[in-house]
Amino acid sequence: MMESSSEIFSWLFVTFVSVALIPLTVVIYRLTLHPLSRFPGPKVAAATRYFEGYYDAIQNGKYTHKIAKMHGEYVMPAILTPYTTEKVAGTNHDVHKRRRAAMNPFFSKASVASRQQVVQELTTQLCHRLDNLISREVKLAAALGAFTRDVATEFLLGKSFDNLGAEDFSAGVGNTLQESGAIWRITKHFRWYGPLIQSVPTWVVKKIGDPGIVECLGFVEDMANTTKAIHAASTNRNTVQDATTIVDTILDSDLPPTEKTPDRLKDEIITVAGAAFETTAYSLCKILYHVYADPEVLRRLRAELVAAGVAGTDASLAKLEKLPYLTAVLTEGLRLSPAIATRMARVAPDRDLTYVKWKIPSGTPVGMTLMLMHTDPDLYADPLHFEPDRWLGQGSKAHKAYAPFGQGTRMCIGMHLAWAELYIAIASLVIRFDFKFSPEALKDVTWASDQFTIGTEARNRLKAVVRRFNP
Image (tube, rainbow, N blue to C red; front, side, top):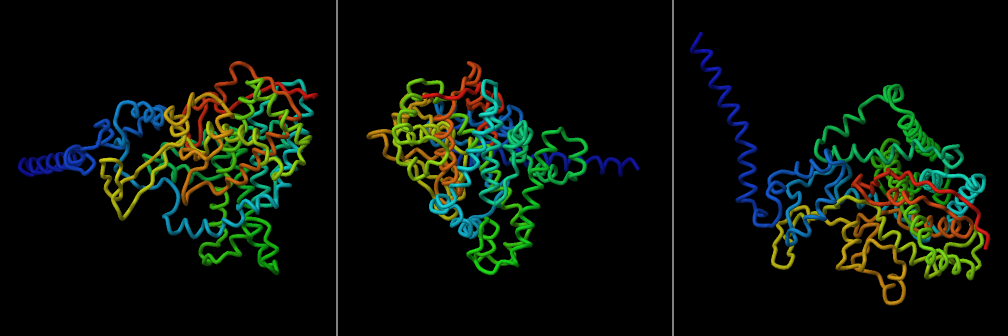
């Protein structure tokens, strides 16, 4: 019996040591023998991706800020998180390319221009709501979030869920979307976390969730049910020309039947719509704050709008796009509020990359961060200052490091819709209202964390006292 116990203990000890040696061996390999081991960077980042995980999960999305500090410490390129290419969500390149091709016509510049009345009508509704709140402090971030959600759902599904009509602008939906970045950040490092959250039954969430979560869940369910209803009704359409929603467009595409199931389309459309909500709302907040914080910018913008005869929400998109100062204001606003705050990694699967003297092995994730590109002092003078003039004259030429919607095959598919919202909403609000922001409002539009989208210190709770503008 004693010998048997001793044998069991010995085997347990050997097993424990073996298991402990595996990660130790991996770390030693990464630090000494791995092809990337000669690259500069923190050794802990070279050893484990949980270096990034600490800043994502424990420091609430501060890894992008850590990257900014490391840019000053190491010669680039540097090792940040080199050993993983797994996706938190998404599809491989070929599948993504096919799905994207099916939706591209719906989001083309011409398609958005032909349906600009969707944006104009909802901008009118936004202005009417603000007219009824004159001389009162308004949750402007909530109002603009309601506007972008209504535009996205109306444009995609032919149905607005009337967030603008809600007394509080459905603020709970926006707040929950803002705070959902935590799920993404944790899932990056613990892949089971996201599926675990998704597996919680709806009835449980409605029972124990706070009112904002319950309201947001109802909003997502409405989108899912509408998508399925359009899918079911599609058999009654006689021609392709009847297609008026993104669902119809996908169903009329040459994608295989397996790509056109109700559940697949539901997930696709919720993802596409979700990408259009808080990103555009934040840009609207950022632009309005900076325009009204600088009297000279506001004066010049209004003068241009008045000279062009812009008096309301009915100005055509084509007309607004020809206004140079308005375009410069929007371009500068997007520079400081790109669609995402996180690092976007790309992989060259079948060839090595060369950067100056550095050879980067194939299969290595190589990432760049839009926010850091857009605020690089070597590229933009006084980069944190809101300066529309940098885009006028010689500066009007497209900057190679300007990419508010990303670049390449994964560029934001809804960029033309976002531009339309910015042109029409900013022009309409500036010519009609004065907004009085408190000195503390700056923290409501200042980038503070990576929530996939831009996270602010005050979680985008921007408020302003609204008054009518009388020329």
